[in-house]
Each structure stands twice: as C-alpha cells, then as structure tokens.
Length: 270
Image 1: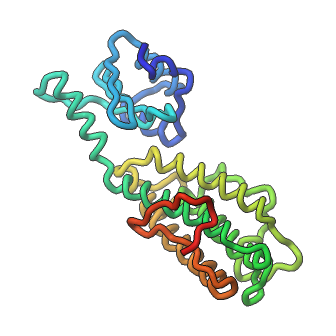
Image 2 (image 1 turned 60 degrees about the vertical axis):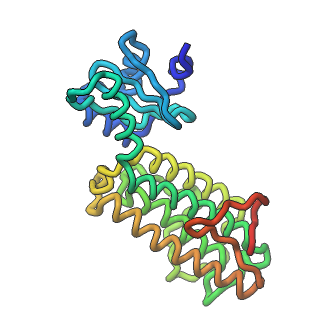
C-alpha cells in the first residue's frame, strides 16, 4: 500500500492551511482534515511523490502533503487544460515547485537566522548573562529579541496569543531598567524552542500569494511583518554580538548567505 495511505491518521495542518484549502476549493465543511483523508483514500485518487511532497489528484483537485511531517500544505482546483491527464499532473507539480519563490527564500533565510540565534544564545558566557550594559542585563537584550520574534513575525494582533508564563509588562522593554528579576538560560532556551517551532510551522505552509494579504485584525501584510522582523531581529542580535566580542574576545559564528552549517556542536565561533 502507498506510504501516504498508510499514514492517513498523521495528516494535520494549521489554521492558515485550513483557511487556504477552504478558500481554494470553496468548501463548506468544518473538518478539512477529514475531507482530505476521504479524498486521498478514495479509489479515484492518483497519488504521486515528487521530492519532499505527495501530490494527490482527485475529482479535479490537487492536494499537497509534506512527505515527512504529513502536513497538508494546500489543496486547489485543477486548472482546465488541453493537456493529457499525465501532462496535467506534471504541470501541476512544476507549479507547486516553482510557484513560491519568495516563500522559499523566506524559509531559507529564516532557517539560517534561527540557527544563528540559537548559536548566539549558547555563545553568551555565564558570567555575562546578568552583566549590565547601560543598566540593562544581557539576558534582557536577548528576551527583547525573542519576544519580538514571537509577537511580530506572524501576527502582532492575534487575539489568541498568550504570553510566556514568566512574562511581565515591562520584561521585554529596553526602556525599563529591571530591578532583581532575571530569566534563566534554561527558561530562555525553552522559550526559543517554542518560537522556532511556531515560526517553522508557519513558513512551511506560507505561499507567495498570501504574503500580500493581511493577517486577521492586522493593518500590515504578512510580507511587511516578516521583513520588519528580520530588520529588528538582526539589529538586536548585532548588539549582543558586540557585547560578547568586547567582553569575551570571541566572535560567534554566522552563516551569512552561503556559509556552511558547522559540523561541531554549538557554540560555534570563528
């Protein structure tokens, strides 16, 4: 039996994926995942795999599923064509592979930035974790960076967003000098892990068309939010880099555009 059919119970998607599929196919069902399962398992389904994705052609629609995570990425109606069924499927696959150039670049750069963030955290020596720079401790510069990633990369006006359990009103505010409060390295690493998973799941399903759209209750496009967060994210990483270089004498490693991921475990330095 096909590997995808063997793992139908693992199928899942995000709220964004559900909205996209319902819109693309004009579905009225509230259970999009079950709808996809039924279509994929039907006798009329033609299932092919190309690279990292499964493509299911069934009843004049195409369902795309990630072959590793079993995430339903999208589904759309087949475009009318004078091509043969085989040629139509090949064309659909080419469209899936080449139709999200901007999002592919976003995924590429986001993954590298997330690696650099984790490495930078691990490069901060214990003796610098609570050291103050103009009254602000090192850990607060880091938390300001992470909290902004968490709030602004996807949708700063998400009504379902919940602050981390240790958050306080001014904890991420660099204009407020803290008293004796302090976040531990373990708290920060757990929080970063949650943010990384959240952002990776989001960009894995994002399409170029959706970049120009605005998230719910937000007056900015998804593309502007992502670009703005890259600007803020790397600016504050640079501040932390400078503190480490000045006080520890070591240069944390950065990947740049073409740099190789190190084989050695973190922390990595030049």
